[in-house]
Amino acid sequence: MKNLSKRTAQRLVRCYYLAREARALGVEFITSSKVALLLGVDETQIRKDMASVNLEGVPRKGYPVEEIINRLEEVFGLKKDRNAVLVGAGNLGRALLNYPGFLRYGVRIVGAFDKDPQKYGREVGGVWVYPVEELKEKAKTLEACLGIIAVPPREAQGVADILVEAGVEGIWNFSPALIRVPAHIALRNECLESGLVMLLHEMEVIKKSLAGS
Ligand SMILES: NC(=O)c1ccc[n+]([C@@H]2O[C@H](COP(=O)([O-])OP(=O)(O)OC[C@H]3O[C@@H](n4cnc5c(N)ncnc54)[C@H](O)[C@@H]3O)[C@@H](O)[C@H]2O)c1
Image (tube, rainbow, N blue to C red; front, side, top):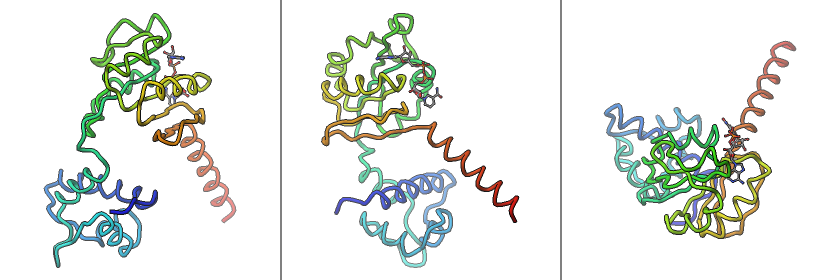
């Protein structure tokens, strides 16, 4: 299988959620036209996307929902168990530590770190919070391959550098800082604030166009 383009991967992630929803409703097959309609994309594109991960439909029935889920979990590497460490046990960090949903993707947060003595030396969501000075060593012993950053933006690059030294393979950055990592590290910047700014901007644009019409 060739490497997926970013766009194909994004569409397939949405197909994956759709298939899970369908399974929860007891649906066994889903047609490309239904997927296309629900995702708001062209049907031919959906067939191409499915074919790119070797998924084939059954004539007059569609794609087997269970097969979509299994195949995409394989493609996205969701069948592996992975340990993660979280840095910054503040408001957002605590919410992430208390969220059990990452386990569904094989991701277990096995340790948290903070620089504030009021925050470390206790458990949050069943995860022990250590002083950040122990991050590099502990992330190694805890065999963490994923680092989650929930510190203020000015601290994010320093934390990312330590995570890289600790040997993580991926960083999930929730701070708005644009951090830099070496090419062999996967990086995802999850800036909720910029999503909010885009939404507010869209609201303004819609309002203006309605006022002008
Ligand atoms: N709270 C939210 O809903 C939210 C939403 C979107 C984005 N964010 C972003 O997430 C980050 C955290 O936000 P928050 O609201 O949780 O802030 P917060 O101030 O509540 O928590 C930040 C935590 O990081 C710790 N910290 C600071 N520097 C550190 C370092 N070098 N090493 C280890 N720990 C360190 C602090 O002691 C604190 O516990 C920010 O970058 C923020 O912009 C937060």
